Image (cartoon, rainbow, N blue to C red; front, side):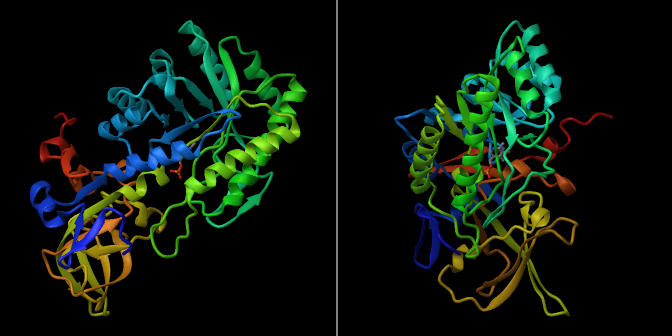
Length: 431
Ligand SMILES: *Cc1c(COP(=O)(O)O)cnc(C)c1O
């Protein structure tokens, strides 16, 4: 397993900033989500420093669907970045943590009226309108609240990014946004411009996730800039902002080849500036919305090895005390991970294991095939790269309590999410 900067091997045992995983397991139990606060803060600061321009305002919006707890929200507030939210629940947690509503961008392809009313009453700064039907709803709710709501329109620029490349297409069937190729697109934008209680500020796009190819972002940016300029001319308006979305790829296994985001961002802002100048566009503000790339490498999950099964077919199953209930990604989309037995960190691998969870699903595997030293019941297994889309996708399947989460910051560690009790599992249930 590729170690993170906060992980070191002392006396053949893997530690997290000098903390023994054995002690963390004894103190907090397993499965345990471990979040390295220091590396997260450093990453946010380096992104902020890299995403600056003398030509327009810049803002990083953390896509909080990747990982959001009250403690994470507090860090977002403290680090003074914006928050990208996709539900009333995410707004609620962000506000409870102290993120100013004005720094929130509210996304979603089907925001409910109740969510929109809540967002507008709380003063959410920007609502990213997904589709033509939503325009009227937001305008009406803003009018009822006696306010003018700042809005962007989510566009589909016809660039669809895949992990290593992109395709250019006018026939996207995404459920998100309105296509730049739609024959009604100008009318849709005009409607937003004309809406009495909307302040139409610009456009948003998000071309995919876990993208390793810089060109995809530049291509999408170029399409967005040209489209924006065309709309300015056609509708005789000025457009303030483009939000270019998130999707920067991260390392899970040696198959992944992410680029350095902090090196890319200055190239990106320069590209946007030069291209804008060339076509006569004068944006006031550009925003990006990284989620996964900000949190993933700071998160890991610690499990205890239970039974080990050698099948008659020759497979070696290593069972852990969690699984798809705390990490659905392998079952959901064949996501891959690396892992290490923390107490055998320097031992040579001898056996190929399938790491399986305890849920009643054959697909409940965290790693299909991994070489590890001979495992024994009671060993601790650590899976890296679980900061994003693990806790936020966790479920109570099989009535498994959700794990606890701790933050480790320099020398200290603290509980930020308590482990569910059995009572918690029935909290909302009536006779
Ligand atoms: C999911 C999402 C993001 C973040 O994507 P990552 O791959 O986690 O960086 C940003 N913007 C929007 C609109 C999204 O849906």
